[in-house]
Length: 295
Ligand SMILES: Nc1ncnc2c1ncn2[C@@H]1O[C@H](COP(=O)(O)OP(=O)(O)OP(=O)(O)O)[C@@H](O)[C@H]1O
Image (tube, rainbow, N blue to C red; front, side):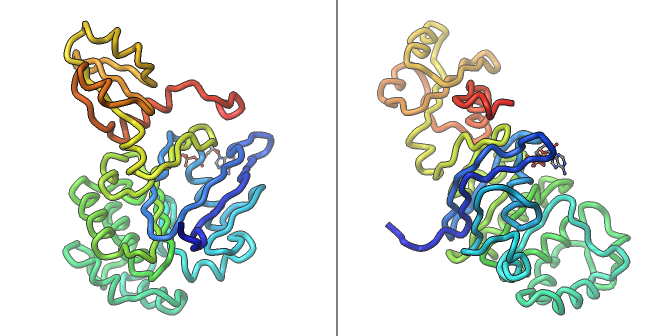
């Protein structure tokens, strides 16, 4: 067992907007060196959770990021935390090189050389004005800037929104190869979980302001199984083994199980680990144990 403090730790994290409770008491620890995928439907509370971690919103309960209270210690924490959100805007009137100079002055851990190297292979040039960049180029610039910050925690909220598939893939590969180290922790939200699944070490599913799954990827593959039955005659036997989900796609019936013995499933068809998007769909449709969180 490691005694190293978690990078992020939340206890009974709640958030209300007016009379509406958006987060219903989240408890979690995020250890160092991990790559977390935070997955949930629109409006599930992902951004609100991240904003609480970043000290951008008030909340009830406790959060510690690198041992500090993010709301009270925001300025200090930002030396070790970098984040990018879909709504963050860059100063449009500056040129790219002026932005780098500005960031060098205001951020102690920003490296303009690194930022420039991340822009290699893109169409973005130092003399360009930010307001003339396309949406995709803006996102590229933003990502380059964030990756040029030497941070212990990097938070990416839908980082590749508006980018084409080639760039999305390149971005994640680059992040993994050029940015991630054992000292760094990465939290990503995305609606395209299939694109990041290969790099995740842990997954969190959030539904209606409650965590319904928080698990290491290795444990997911031990715990969850997917079965595609050989023939319709096997459906009854498959159902008898208590799947958490059943779906017929393109004429094939697929079952997802939690904690099932794979040797019992194998005679019925093809057994594998579900993809994160299939598991997400399965667990989102399962009736919730806590009726409060279904509201
Ligand atoms: N400032 C606000 N005032 C009132 N309600 C808000 C505010 N910000 C967010 N909400 C509500 O809180 C809920 C959670 O929003 P949040 O942005 O955290 O969801 P999300 O999971 O990030 O969604 P998305 O995938 O669409 O980004 C939504 O119902 C949203 O309408």
